[in-house]
Length: 203
View: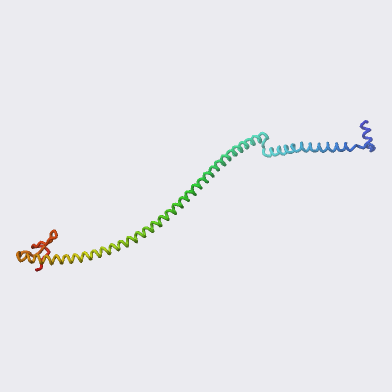
């Protein structure tokens, strides 16, 4: 059948296509639309990027070169960031260790302060008790000393009176034989009658 016959049949509505032919055409049409969409999208993106490069006065090669530089700088920054993070972690560990050491020091200081306060309280108590005992002993000794002085003075008065009486008795008797005797002295616990001494006899 020639093309003219085929067209005449369509015009005369004598030709009736089968359903599977229609389905095939629909599938082909859809595929063509999808392919066109896939091909058009990169083209549009490329056109858009080309316009953007024109706006910034930069070629694709220059842009790629700049992009490589940016990537290199980004890699260096990431390396530095990792180094900083590692150093920061080390600092954090050091700070934590220092905090622990500081806490231990504060704890030890608190314990020592508590021990010092206890010893200081005991020392103050002991000093107060010792001072009280010292004052008591001092008063007792002062009383005993006063009493001893009083007894000594009493004994000295009595002893002096006895010595004077004895010297007067002895020397007055000796004065009968020796008129120059007018005084006495004590030597090695013995009364010696003499003249010119400070202790005078009374006859």
